Image 1: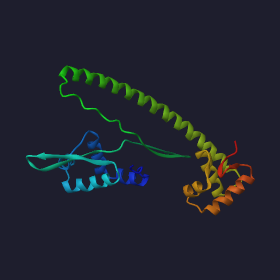
Image 2: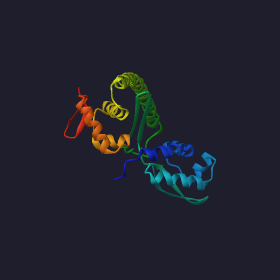
Image 3: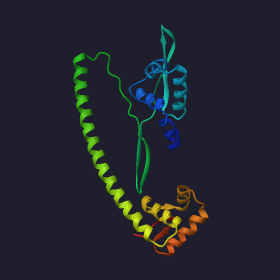
Image 4: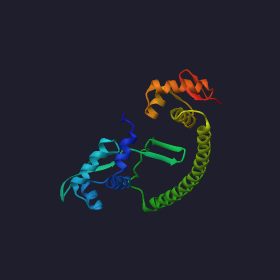
Length: 223
């Protein structure tokens, strides 16, 4: 089973405009390197180098070869992942999520399908796609509204935390516990890049102040 893609790898891939274009063209269907080189107006070697990066990260896969009368065999490449990247940043709001969804296997149409059947199916799929697009736009509108509300609440929480008589690290830890809904010692240490002993002392002080509670190693804000 393939390892989930790391955030750093994804930023490295998407940070290059050529690789973004490669992913765009491959999302439209399988392509071979010479074809991609012509579309991108770069050398075939450059395409191969970028494809290697994408293949090593599990985003692209070789689909097979096809003989060509015009030259050597053509190796076709296609997408191997269905990724959803969700990145939200605003004052008192930072969220980065990568969701890898399962790809649905597509069934090939029977070769005996007549033009009328295909046209009818095409119309039906175009309508279905339009309905899905409307639904996605509505979900995006509602999501933006929810994120806006979350950001406003987070700003207010940050303002209140800043009024508390706590040191900087204690405020950071308290803010993190609010945002995440709670966390374990090692998670807090890793998230804030702080030594566990230092974090543990801060957590004890926050507990003494009655601001947080701990249950089986899980720390959360007192509700």
